Length: 243
Image (cartoon, rainbow, N blue to C red; front, side, top):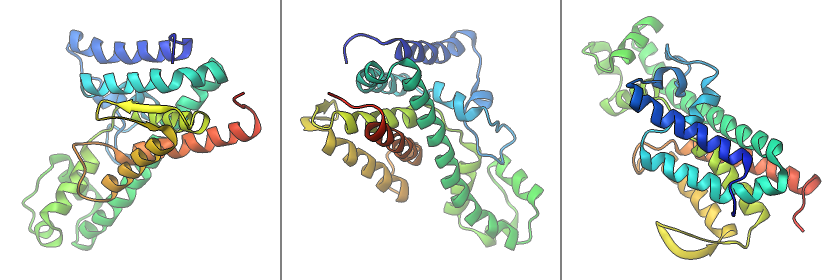
């Protein structure tokens, strides 16, 4: 860790500005900057970048920025500012893309039930935008749980730097595998090579079951971790080595 490096300092400043400014200016940038489902009218390709600078609460931005500083500092010191920023944005964008692909798979499985019930695409999107329906075709075709799921996928945008931070976390674990970590929710020190895989497996479990704790984009975490691992592993083997 140590001093605040240039790249991380600028990332934290931008994140804080975009968190604080809308509250003072009474503006909501969610429809423009948060990552929406591709079929949603508010979706924009740029959101794969901008969603990383949006956060839903003070605790959300606090933990993400702490993780960025704590685990990213030694990486930026080792790689340099440009390579670190390339890594960070690659992990964050990759997290967003993988999150979208998983959501698309889940969405299409339920969407087909609407089609089989005789609804056309415009009718389906209109129903999803309203978030409720009394159409008997829908009531007879899908369960309330399925409707809630597809409505959430369509209407709930993703925000936060967590995907990119997970990439940073995995890279830290690859280069500093014996570093002891002790976080607030797990105060007993444990080596990064054990702690980080446990966190990722936890996200996989919660993402694939109905036991998720809160409205968390678990597959964005997993996606950021995967992209971060691939880049960091390649660099570790071919370019950058810790002495």
